Image (cartoon, rainbow, N blue to C red):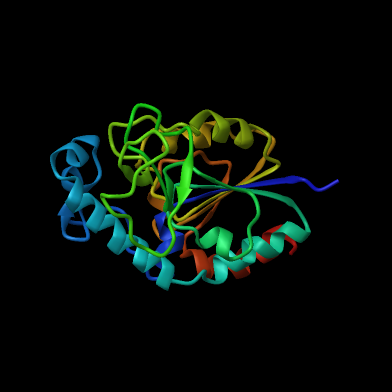
Length: 230
């Protein structure tokens, strides 16, 4: 029986595929303040700006490719029951062939209703462009399937339950500064083998029972092969 390998991934793994991290050092995302493009209020105030912004991000995702780390996790499915929990809104894990991926903050390749029941159905976006004239089945304009600041994270409890079952738990490419997702690491069982991968891993506020790999996601592959034996 395969043991459970759970991976919590963040923006760092996508950055090596050319996708900029959600928040740069200057606090901006693609030259916009978070308040302008990542809150429910922004959608109410200027939905056209948000549609254009996420259409541009979606085009970038489509033109990017999975990297060595994404492909390595796909290969691990031959040896472990792999479950990926990602904070990223791109679909690079899936395009690398990973079959069990939970998107905490949504998936930019999909849209959802801007009405009162946004999580009832997701709509695959053909191409990269979502228009203000695109509506859900209930008649509301479609918005990006992205969890914005100030919104609940619908799959948070599901992610916590998955982590509780981990035999091996890998945290990769995340600074653990985005809440409530950052609290998920506390659900890892004491008996689980735990690994954290990040260029600033030594600076993270993380318990001493983690193996620390102070490197990028791609650089970590050779180290993880030695640790995991595959």
